[in-house]
Image (cartoon, rainbow, N blue to C red):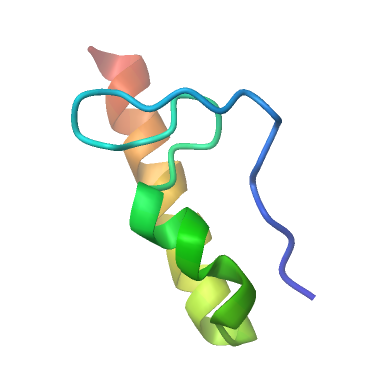
Amino acid sequence: MVESMCISVCVLDENEICLGCYRSLKEIGDWSHLNETQKKHVNDAAEQRQRLDCQV
């Protein structure tokens, strides 16, 4: 089972990306309706955003 990357730090930046989990507002809202494959893709995208943010 794919778990949410939420760490209960729910603050959105100007691009509607959560500064805690790096998911978009849409991804967060859609989470409960996604299948396991889709959730994996969301987590992969969030991890990529986090890596890019850490490099800045």
